[in-house]
Amino acid sequence: MSEEEILKEALRKGLLRTWRGEGKNHGRKVGQYYPSGIGSCLRKQYYDFVSPKPPTPEELAIFATGKGIHEAVADALQNSGVVSVDRIEMPVSLQLSKEVTLTGRVDILLAKMMGREVIVEVKSSSHLPQQPHENHVMQLQTYLHALNLELGLLLYWDKRTGQISSFRVERDASWLNKIGERTFILDAHLRAGRVPLREAFVMGKYWECDYCPYLAECDPFNLNGVEKGASLAMVGVSAIQRVEGGGYSLEPDLVELKEIVKQLKKNGQTVCVLGDFPDDSGKDTTQLLKTSGVNYDVIITKPLGYSSGRTWKAELAKRLATKYRIATFVDNDESVLEHVRRIAETTLSLKPGDRGR
Image 1 (cartoon, one colour):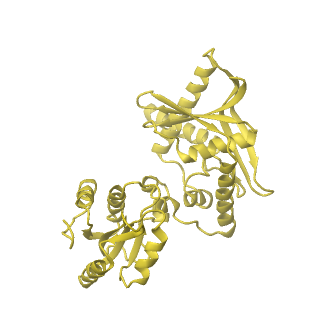
Image 2 (tube, helix red, strand yellow; image 1 turned 90 degrees about the vertical axis):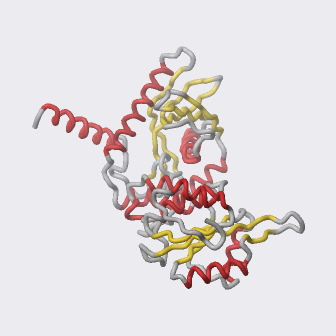
Image 3 (cartoon, helix red, strand yellow; image 1 turned 180 degrees about the vertical axis):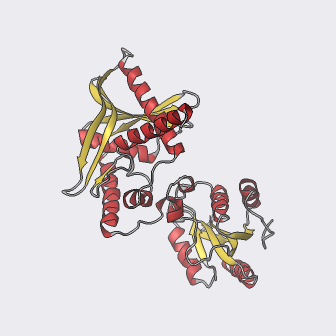
């Protein structure tokens, strides 16, 4: 082995040992969970326990970059003369029940910042978020409750530009309920040997699926009851709020929708309805479609994570095209069709639908 190869092997092994030393998916025990993971997809966390995979070179690089930024921030704060750092990488534990515990490490604990102790949680990112990510807030809330402190700060560092943003997070009991609920759901599934739902898919966080190491095992873009490679027709249906009289009307309406679906089925296509329904009408509208004789095969409704129906439809179509042949895309909104063409043009071959091109 050459010196160059020895150096690369040493770096790989050293990073892997450091990664394992940080507790990353190594030696995990049912009943003991990480605050840093509890806000992410429950199915991914389940697989982390039952069939953990070694980190990819890309994951090790991200880990090393994040670790370096954490250490740089801690060192900078210690040397700032502005704040006083009490502890770094401080172990904490939050007992949720006799059998279930959340254990982690606080990045930085500041001593008496404006008269009180403050937790600082550091996150490296490819771009600065406009709002803190929910899973990061959940992690910080866990630490606040574990240490019985009132205030934490989420600090985001853009690793490309060096720009920084921060968000204050005050301890909130409602978060403790959510943290406990998610942890107990994961715990129950692990003890029963039952895989949780495809949470990232259901929530519309398709980008999490794209980079998940368990993408093959989970297979989130495989539609139940639809054979892979099938000819798929995607039909957009929207619930439009009426100006007068309240309530919602469907576009296309039921009569027209039945005819569209009938024709697509006649052409041998599997019909997937994409329902863009407001939160307060979603369940009722889905039930209406099921009981009104619309002979579709699958229905997927817009997740809460998307404010834009056109973006969601395009993102979903791009992923489904990896499993099926998208023969037809039908939607009332021409801008939706154009958006689908633009975002998915490398994977989709769109044909004119009954209501658009």
